[in-house]
Length: 165
Image 1 (spheres, helix red, strand yellow):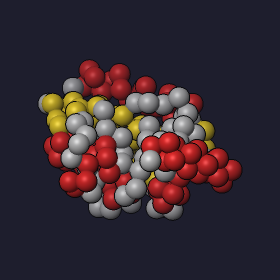
Image 2: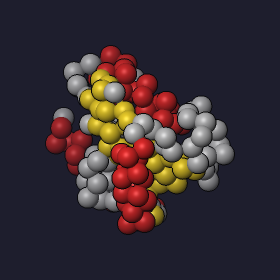
Image 3: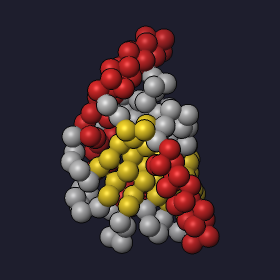
């Protein structure tokens, strides 16, 4: 199924709340303000694995700190050549263009009306059989995030904001 606009956000939320999942991956390059809202209604019994691109300046380090503080059920790692946007549960995946940010997923409504994001939702066992091992390998390649990484990211985040404004 092809999704755009609010349908994209709804598709991501559906992957996250799937009752059969054990590990959910969010391999999404850039994370911004209020992305943690995606996790509000999730049961704490699942294993959520977030992979982000932390050093390019596109991820808000405060958002990563917030995700890390959610508890042991959410793990966050960095893979700094990541540009993908894949959200995958056990039986469904969303593969598309949106980052986990208010701009990418329109998490804060109309302020993001200028961005046009699109993705594909798949329940195909054949596709998932390729996606899951790819994500497992990404996770193994990704590095844990410490305070020094977040400090570096804060500087890069600030520099990128200065260029945009």
